[in-house]
Length: 359
Image (cartoon, rainbow, N blue to C red):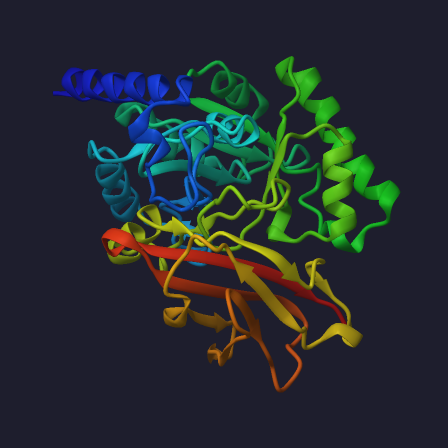
């Protein structure tokens, strides 16, 4: 049975590779909908859902843990033929080169390289033949609850695994000076080179926190894409140094939600304001707005929600412009705003944003 599963996964992976290699493949060009696509260019909502985990089977930390029963259900769902679970690097490459992605594209990511990743997640993902990316902070490696460098070297040799940069100290980057940010990035890269013989080109922001200045530093350091922790599916309009991921834990890892997020469609938007994800006291509450791509119909059905505020009053300013107004400031800390719209085939379009509110 295991051999059969691996054979099926290999065939599916081969098909996905073919679809990625030929931009004119009709099935891939129209993988999501007809949202502005042409045979030479993917539709703006031809994208992917990226899921994010931290710990596995460690119920002492429920906010960052997924139970093993939940994780095994997730793997069983993603092993169904309809999904195309691709390496994160392949998705980023398709975005950069304007190549279409196959339908129901999903990537699996794991942050922090806790010991349970090696003990619980890696064996299950390898058995299922599912590719995955682990974002590693180099400082804690070898600590009591973390993977070791020997384990990471073994991981780096696995065909299914990719290692990404997550800084040295898992720092709150927006609170550091520009020199300190550059050092977090460069020192981690140097350690990866020394230990693994290579430098990652994918980055994930600790806590999902970033500012425009931090994004610029990540780009300048040579990374080709960076990921936050705001919910949403990746669209062709998504900022490549602020790509979304769906966080999964015990409370938000049930199968109903899991199927919703791995089946999600992008809600392609542009002209998002404010354009910096750090809100100072003078900017809190923000004047928040965006324009939905003209190819998306029915935006009167758009619903938006904010942390601690519930459903918001959505103002549509003619055409495709959407703005949200808040009658009081947000508390200090991380604030998430999510907007969803029912799309084709009963799939939710999803655009999310995370702000860091400073005091």
